[in-house]
Amino acid sequence: MKTLEITYKGDYAIVQMNRGKVNAINAEMVNELSTTFRDLEKNIAVKGVILTGQPHYFSAGLDLIELYQYEQEQITHFFTVFGALYLQLVQFKKPFISAITGHSPAGGCVLAVASDNRYMAEGDKYVIGLNEVAVNIQISQNLTEAYAFWMGDGLASRYILEGKLLSGKEALAAGLVDELVPLENVLERAEKQMKIYMRADQEILMNTKAKLRKHLLDKLDLNAETSLKEASELWWKPEIRAKMKAYVESFSSKKK
View 1 (cartoon, rainbow, N blue to C red):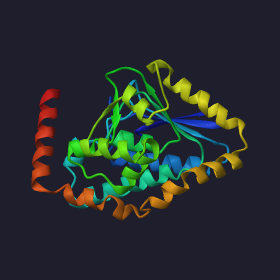
View 2: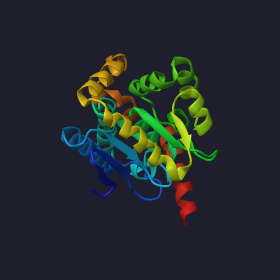
View 3: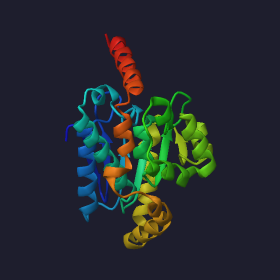
View 4: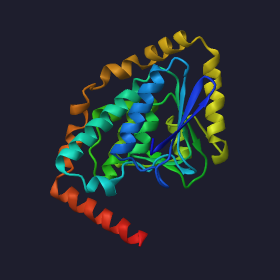
């Protein structure tokens, strides 16, 4: 694995995203996350998974600089596999916790909302949210349903239309995250909750999780090729491409 590090802790596993400073999501990371979670779900010795990031960044979202360079066939494929990864994570049968070690906008939030619990680093500088509207990416119906699942239809609707990034305190108040803890204790807090899950009968736990998520899963488009089709098509809209180009050029100039 080039973008992930996996640690086994007895009967659960910790998957740490490790791609550069901000864990920007590209095709390679999507493929590795998909493979890893598929293998962990099949592994009978692993009864739960914690997904985490690096200090200050869970994931900054999609790697727009790399994605901007993709050809049309590549971007269509990317959105298909990214949509498939979300569906895979939201249907993951075992306990799944996100230890959010900092910023988690857009694509980072996509990964986090699929989990059963989210423990986030405290601090006003860290943000989380589905801000796709603000960054000119078409959000899928599947993601709107997940947001509403955690915070209710009204708040989800307002925040998604606004493209709002939430502070930790706002995310806690909305029900998007479970608890705010100091950065250095985020993973420890996630492990504490995972150990509680590990005490339960695993068949009962997975059956119960399936029942709790049934209404959400019934609303989802389980065809990954169609769930983000609009996003891949609108990616090539001239006005959007112009904004993407300006972003890429602005970011690249800051790095020089």
